[in-house]
Length: 459
Image (tube, rainbow, N blue to C red; front, side):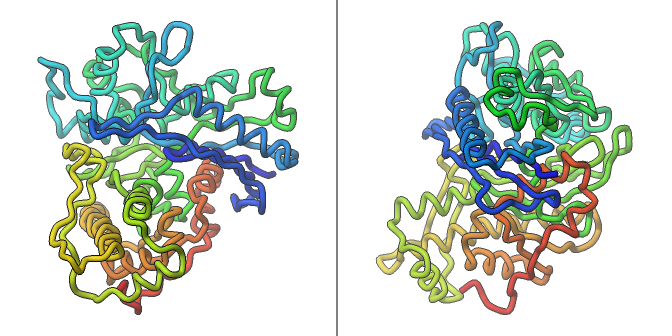
């Protein structure tokens, strides 16, 4: 049974075919870059119809290459926190707000939760611009009151392709409106968002499977009778794909953005573990939660530096990084895109200090990369407090896979913890496939991780 895995990311849309053990098949990958509109005012949006067109192009390419013939299941990893307002005809009334958009703010006179700590415990979220509790009132104000209801990006995209596209528990938890224990919309969170259940997506039951609409079944006949599983939040999928599915192993993922997360088994109705005030918590599925911290900077830091600082390429850059002295770190703030929750630092808060005429572009890149390592180390210590013991760490994601130096920097900052690396850059797709096929328990065995060399200094 091959699995078609879709990755609905922030910088690209990907479709790839995996074998039954969720390993990518050679050559069975289609990718389209998407244009993320960012601005100094905190804008971070995507064009929904164009995003859908990119996904369709990926599926067309895979079909033309004969890669869809033996597919028996479709799984999806999708970004958390996105939202798009739609009208009565189902058409978007504006762009998709991504996790990167920091513009939403409380309307005049709005007040937050009655008991913020209890609200955080129930929903795993805060009354914060990243979540629908603040985003939906703000969007209503900015769309002239014409909103019929709200969707996340995966519900919009899959709703165009499938006979139905209810919101998975994983995606619903990323809205900040879900009670993580009862797995239903939280009444207080909905009230803060000014929404009734009819304004929100239908919640998918545990056994939900979708099918292609007739027009798309004719377009891709190999997928005509294939079931589609509910989307998994990208962070949760990355943990599973990294083999980090229990309290002994944390995932540090660096893709476009970055995060550190720990996964635990908490079925519906079970008491939720303690949640430190600095950390969020979302659902992987009906049986598991993931707890952690996320950052607006990750591989986008490297991409920015490469573009603006005219860095050398490939082996030349690796050699230049390896020559840097151990001392001489530049003070840095890597919050170029602002804070992820619960922080409130706005976009445009990045800083570099201590520059001299001897500072090179490679020095600046190294400072940025180390700065992210330091943020991760701080939050990992808080995360470990929830399980009362040190944990192993698995590095994953395209950005750290592409940079041996960055992996060594993480290993040095996170020492003495054992630090491992999952070299597969498609950990989100692999993780979503394991969730969809009911094989989370096999994730550790299938992860194929290797030990990061801790003996070598990142300098």
